[in-house]
Image (cartoon, rainbow, N blue to C red; front, side, top):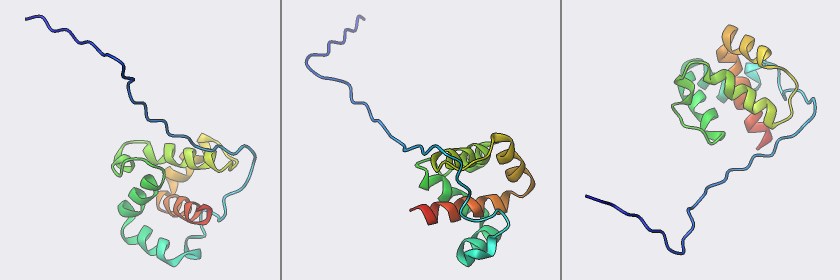
Length: 116
């Protein structure tokens, strides 16, 4: 069998997602250890951290499954930091998410809540 495809007068659809990247050296709106600044986020991060991590990922237009991939929370933190022009490095993100990941997830959630 011989198959032929012919496209006449149509263009493939392309979906483009744009992000505003702010350059600068701003700081996080709250410290990594300021979990109690928002009791709702603190309680969710303490008792349902998977749900909070999924919410943070979805707020960045990512899959809810993203937090369950190795290293994905570090990449998510780096993305949030870059998007909002927050100073730091990938090494800083690795340290926070490796040593105190629950506090890091709460900090990302507070930042998103404050910025939106």
